[in-house]
Image (cartoon, rainbow, N blue to C red; front, side, top):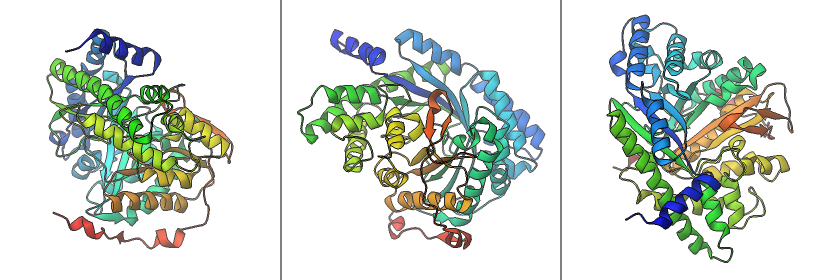
Length: 451
């Protein structure tokens, strides 16, 4: 039974503690849009997205008004476009422009799925799509792209790792007059989930239904506020408090997902119960870690605090929803988190420390601004290191770094909105070029044989 205290508590979370639904993301399969003619395929893609997602934004706004719950983004994810490109041939950028047109028509914030899954090698369409990513992202505003280059079962495709280092650099170069934003819409994965509602990594997996609604919740401010009320709690008591708070946050996401499913007439997929920060004051994962007892995020003890937080969020959230998926846990995107930005500016938070933290959080090295003269081989080395963490530990890891063309350590890029701003962070410039240029594959670890 819902009581007055629960209602008032939720209102306070929304008004004072930055609680929101970060996104409702409609996944749409484009497999039935495949055609040997790229022009016909694009027509089918545009028609299907506009038909299926016609009411997505309006439905989200209706739910916001009905329940008083802010839904920050409405998004669409589609089948990896490399699959369509392999069938149709032609310039994949045509698909990118079609997706951008559809996004503008239906009014969503982002559309994801300009993607390729190449962990075991390149099939027809994969290389063409990957080579087109910089141009596609430079010529669009709402499009997001992802490439999965490794998995625990398959190992790491080092040819793809080499290629993605180059494409990240090219994407930044093509948009150097726009804060290198194209690189901020490109993520390189290991163990990419098929039901992730968060950009830039969202795509609609081939095992997913024809159309589905996934919800991503967020509540770092709520968790930080709860912890700050109990300064004398032990660590296990803090973990229990986080679990209870995550339960309440996730219940809200479950409610929104079920309501959106009913109103749109499509299946409800998953709630991703991640703590996704924003640049807004009071909405920071770093500030949660500092509320637990760190002087500043990045110092000694940061990885341990984050491990406890991530685990407690999952334990609390998994009991609150009939279906939890996506990434689920705590995100640490530097430019999107006010506390992370401060820690990076002060030098307390380094890329090496962030890499250690990715072993225990939801995703990986996310929204990190690096010097513009960083070589493609060094970027590939960063991708390889992060993929190795994911592969060996059987978890999702990813890299979204933005080479700040023409800028050096201490300078900043300003993206605006949820993407925030970020200081250029120091990178170890010792070259891994010989390693990267060997090509081939890093074999899957032994535990990949578990059945």
